Length: 399
Image (cartoon, rainbow, N blue to C red; front, side, top):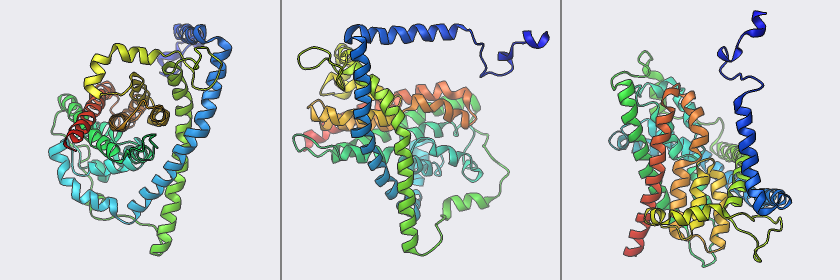
């Protein structure tokens, strides 16, 4: 009898009762959200638009992102295999302490996440040879600096390759976006360190009882693949490309689900003002919000169209989904070089942090600082977009 009445939710935090308030709240919100959209588009048109949009995104966006990820993965693996990343680590390490307030070894995490994705920082943080450089208050900030550069190479390459109807090159704009992301990362990390230093103090190190061997390996040596230089070249290139396939597959759910919903909240009806169930139709909610917030968004980011707000909103959940919105906006004349700079900065700096920060902070064994990490990174992303906009404006005036 005691077993029947025992409340197992107190024993296991991930266990909930079959009948709970949460279920009814979710059902109510689910019905309200899609009922709101369906009342404007029609239920049949809404469902057809969802399926047609998801299919078009899969064929024309996801596979394109995957192709970029394969090439970027191959380049990243070659840079790592032949020491380019190690050399840059040596050069940039002395800058990390005065700029970020972190040990020089943290630059390895910057390269790891820039060449792959946010969680790459977790593998490093689990290595004692890496952790021994960090004081306890500095370790949680790895979540912020890693996220600020997540998918950086893929996002930058993608932006540079977007064709413009006017023939405009977006190479400079993408590079300015990278600079904006760097500025945003500094802001995010510094705010985070303010929180963590108060919570943990500034004296205790993460690891204090390990030999110098691991640390020396991390900074003075690098591991390479077995075989000749030609064999290592081919293996690195192919293995890097394979990791790009895995990453390309990983972004598909985020692009299809998040991007479909955001597009339906962003776009309007068809050209004649009716809903037909075609791909990319919607109710135009986000542009309406963007117009009402124009007095804030214009001086901050300088968006060409109020629809530009959809990109950073999507980047909160998934950077891959966010960049999937941009080619269509460029083709329709709704985004120019300034927008590309801002999009690059915010997609890099935020890179889906709302969907990764909780898990990353838990992996770093700092779950109590999750809220502070999210607050810090929110400001970091806003500063990234603001910086990219005004750097682009300044360079345009000088040019």
